[in-house]
Length: 265
Image (cartoon, rainbow, N blue to C red; front, side, top):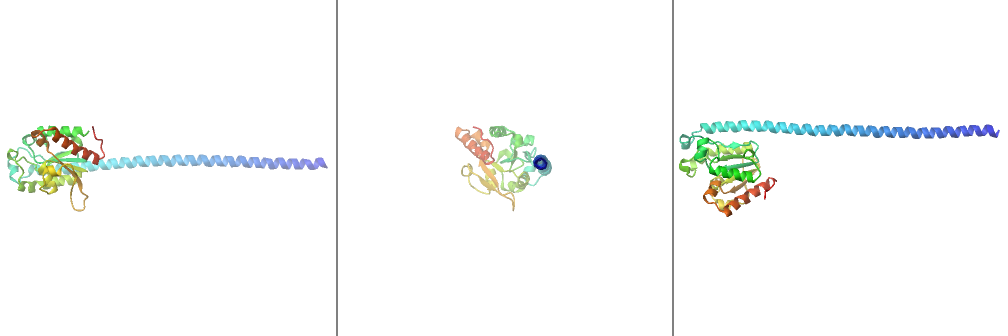
């Protein structure tokens, strides 16, 4: 009797122990399966996210390229208008109009007073000695001429490089204003008193204006653009001194800091 009783008890214990073990194994299998599925899902969505970011970045790049093409086309239209312009007497005296040139997406826009003899001959801005010095200033900033946009208040050369007349500025300024609106630079560098006074609508001297940022308003409802007045490179050639050179470089360093660009020593 004892033997017959003990056998079923032993069998039951073994059976129960088997169920517990098999249940534990089942749970372990289920947990492993859940973990594996979770990892697969996470990797799947991670890949999807990376792909989504890459596609978004590519889309933004395509849109930027399209915008640059559209800007370039509009700037070309303005250049064509300038080349045909006869709104003031300078149109009949010029050899070539000088609309301006550079990067349609430029972060910095340099604006001078008016073309000189070399610019009038070539139809390009800042190509004479003053332009060569400006190229050196741009290079010292760690940039290339192709990174910026360069223009002038007047698009035609005044006789004997005289100062721009009021009626000439009134006739010509809208071309520059349209270029600024299209390019929408983050900073305008006004080279010399005439450029700074015209863009800021002030009679202050360049000595009073330079060295600090001002605000240029490109249009109603648009945020102001930072404007840094500094000495014209033609002025530096006529009045070269270590002090004047230092002042221009200090102005340009402030521009680089404003744009969060590296400042060369």
